Length: 392
Image 1 (cartoon, rainbow, N blue to C red):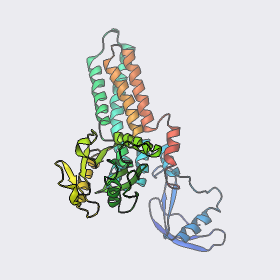
Image 2: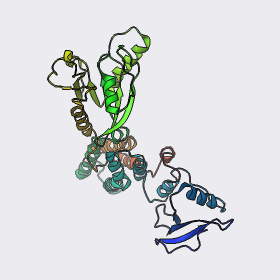
Image 3: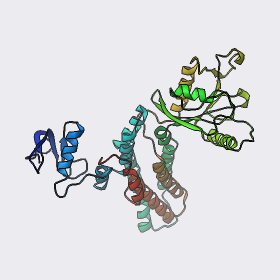
Image 4: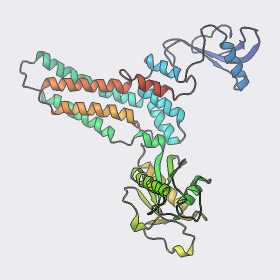
């Protein structure tokens, strides 16, 4: 279809012709990557065509007539790279997150994992764990005094468990990926929906003078200063006999409990107890609203006064929940397996029996194997690679 192949890792211009009619489809760059020095570890030929949809469709149609060729399934190239040992599961997860990144902070965190940052750290942990395991197994086989346990073995286990637990205390990937949940709450007609609409730049919530208009929560994903947020409008908090509104009020209480940041538009003394509370004196343009209470931010959804200050406060508090720049953030799956390893190693550090120590270190090694994708992750792989675009 494209004539002779160029030398490995060398780009060459080739005419791409339909094998059925010999019709010229495009003049493209052709690159050849031989196994194992390719992205998947297999032999690969890459066509860099002109970007028009008609050109790409024509080339794909012509390729489809060649026996043995088919379109790749979603994520198939990355899955082959994983199965051939070119990347581990943490790098594949980072690549999936990189494809889906919509903010600069998401891109940086995903790139750190995709480039093997977490894999390299795991390799260091595995080296330490393997050394500890080897010492424990050797002690079982060769030490004559079954009661004597080398104190340095227990110290090493304790230090490794502490290191793993310190990583579990770091900000996680979920707020970065899904957005820091910012819940706007308060009594009916306090200006919650108007504030949501002006921040979002569009009418996402219904605004009326009738109390109880908002019956259910409304979520608005957005980015402020590169920080991903999930802004949530809620039903006004009050006693009500309306069955539907009462359900909305109950959900509001649950959302306040789960909020990463709470923006409160009610009376300051009535604000719920929350570690990241921002009190807002809404409708500050109205004379009857009076002075802005101390500790509150005066905001007008009509004039925009105070809006920038409020958004700066939200972004500042949201950043405290996100990984540092270029830092590696663990997702829920990764943190779960690291916690398994830390718990097992912690048990080993406190054990008084060398057999128990060795067994728990083996359990920790198994947890690391699941973490990197070496064992027991088939369902995880199916879910992960289905997130990828066609073929990637």
